[in-house]
Amino acid sequence: MTEERLRPHAHEGHGPHGGRYPSIVDAIGHTPLVEIPRMCPNPNVRLYAKLEFMNPTGSVKDRVARALIEDLERSGRLSPGSIIIEPTSGNTGIALAMIARRKGYRVAVVLPDNVTRERRQLLALFGAEIIDSPGALGSNGAVALAKKIVAEDPRFVMPYQYGNPANPGAHEDGTAEEIIADCPEVDVFVAGLGTGGTLMGVGRRLKRHNPELKVYAAEPLPGEKVQGLRSLDEGFIPEIFDPTVLDGKFLVGNAESIEALRDLTALEGIFAGVSAGGAIVAAQRVAREMARGTIVVLIADGGWKYLSEDLWTRDLDRDEEVVESLNLW
Image 1: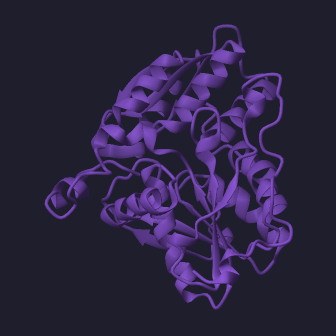
Image 2: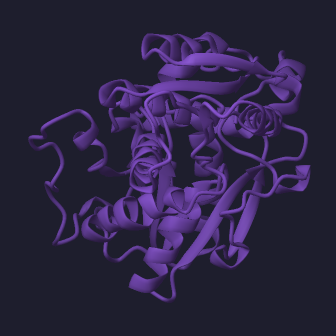
């Protein structure tokens, strides 16, 4: 590590994190941006991680869930007997359940039956009704079942993160503005491809800030199910997804995602969720090709919800078949 790498930029220091808020919902956002030099393969590139697990329920989806519920409130779609329903791999549902409980609404989530036990426990703790969808169908199966339920029962109201502009809007007005305030020199933004909301919202705003900025997605290899991310080649493209915002995408496998995840914990002390490993791998690929510059990679959630998968101690070489079959994105 060079002295140049260790020298802080003039604007670096304590940002507007923390603060005092009237409720836990108002405390969403304001997450820190932390440099992770030991994960960067190029000494001329600075790599920063946006730590979204610092949100109240531990993921970037707190931002989206708040925006989705506020959109339902503004539109007048909620009545006294309404039940908010949403297809999710876990994080959006957990965030919706927490915010809905705080606001006094009922929530049901449609969840693949093979997500981690920790996610189910958190959903139950926040009072969500869990409706299982076939795990083999991933998040696509959850979307299909949720749409069927909404069509058959008028009590259910779906904000639908995959098609609601409030999803990218939460990132355009929030996440991106925080990045600009903390790291105005950003050249590249990298995030995992899930609903597309983070990449679309942050990407649009950062490109207005810097028209030369590049946006890259980490996408799972076709056939690999990693909780939180999706492959566009598997037949479902979220309505909010705009391919013109992306400058490229990187296919990332489960095994290399887990390796990066372990390195992030061992080298930087950051205990993150598995999709973060995929995003880090993509950011490293970009960094290797850059002459110099600054990359911001979004860490969508923390590792606590994945402890039951034993990802930090499992022998990846001996358990290769198990790793390939894990539903991690």
